[in-house]
Image: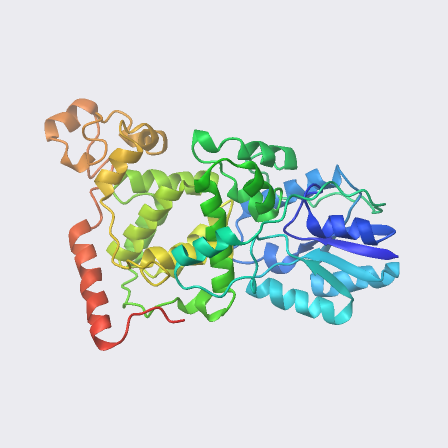
Length: 422
């Protein structure tokens, strides 16, 4: 029996359910990667993320022979299978809007065998929940599969090279490096999300090898968002609640994107994102809060900028997170507010992180680093940093901006129900 194994978001050999099952059921397996033009050429595809994906493909081809093709999978996968006389195409399921349509079209033309691998709990295993906590309690009760061993099948492929793309500095894109990250949970952020995104590691492996309940809870958030937002794809564009009227001030949007808002913790986070494709989870909450609930900018503007830059950008997860921050998602407290100065002091007490990314503030004393616009003129002259010249004053009043958001929110609620639209 000849089979094609179609790699997509599972660029690994160890603990790959679909690949393992194919190795048990097929005499010869032809591994295939299609560099999907519909994804690689999209407006919201980060060049850095695309480069990381290709690096992961390169590490995969060092383990097993794979054939690499470019183009539209709807055409390439059936053609490849037909030319080989393969009896089936094996793959692990993907759940996004585009992926679901793509896979349905492919499977009209070839015999498909698919498996649950991208999540721990799949659609149908639990009802659709609109609130995370009750879902989490039920999720914990669902038995989780153990990791699968390395496949021992016979693999054949052309072994052709990965297409060349502009070079970026990215993490080590191998299975081994991904597994090492799991051991780092006690040292702060594991930065596992880029590896989960391309499938250099599975949720299964993380679940069974982490000692951190926090990490397991994050895995549950992924499953929760994927199940909820793919139960009705309208949620991805329309949100879960009715929305306020946004101002979408172009000057504020550009200041936010470029890290020139006059709020050091926000500017540092945005500059790190633009330069590296990464941002800590707490900082993601803060930058999305100020954009949507203070600057009154449509969450879609922020979500698109993130997708254009994030190394770990997953459309469903990113969209859900932005809706949560904007008060139009599943947050049970849609008027949630953050004290930026307090959060900045908690995250970066001495301003080390701020000074790393906002170098014009390098000489600012720690007592002023979180609110440099409050520095006395004498201090500004002494250290050679003029607020308004070398670094901007805050581009918006935090209190007034948020108060206007609340006013619009409450006005909308008086006219119509603001409950979750589920």
